[in-house]
Length: 358
Image (cartoon, rainbow, N blue to C red; front, side, top):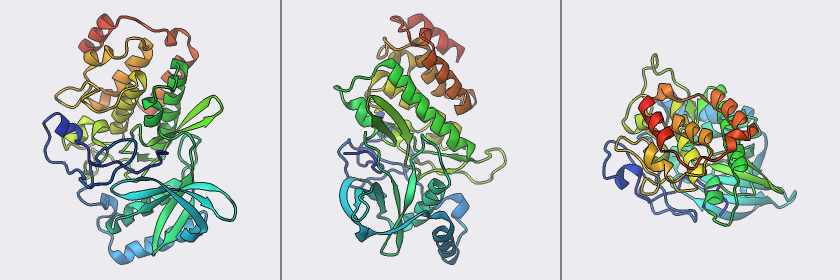
């Protein structure tokens, strides 16, 4: 399956797998996808704080404005030959081919009436973004009075699929390069005043051109405006895919764009050890952090600077996590430096020092 899929359902979440957690809602539908099963924590209200006080007439006006100002191209659903490639709680995903032009795209069809405001927000957000490491928005399809987003088709599938394929050789230079791609995309997203809130290896796509792989950040259905957690009165709901959610989100504390950095750290840990983010596989602590010492035993051939960067992103204190502007520069340095890509065979002393410093 190409992983321009929606959030996958019906697996035990991170809290359930550890036998602890309360106060967050998870979806429990029967939708499945071929890459595995994974729940998505849903907002208690599918509208966001910015839209909570918007009545239905106002939303109709917003829809008209979206059609008038935010849409590049408008299609009908019968313009396409459709092949389903994924499904989840919120939507079904199709690889579509335009019957006249032959253009191949991906169509995400919303399946929940109450999710319409989120679809509109995603369409508006994607339409105003332009970056080589952000999934490109191509237009919308109208079906039964609803808008459905059309995006570019990425031929390599998801990062999760690439990492899970044992036959896929991934040298360290390539792993660092894809990590840099993700950081570049997230740096751009944050510079737009928006944070992702569901950054996972399943929501990162990989474009393959010959021997070159490029990572592209996608799926902005849960993206939100970056809040000022000191000044803003509202409290963002806990959303996202549990294995990647930052501890402050799980603990129902106020959170901001730094939660994306924790998620990125978990993605880096997946890339480094080529393991699943499931805490039954990736060692985690009782307070939902990363168990640095236990994890390091799974990454003994990893370049030390690359490993430390992942650890820095996974720190419990959000204020200690490096911003993406800094992460981009550090990854560029690691990529350029042969010394930065040299493997260390023993981490015990270095990891112990890191833990003491934190």
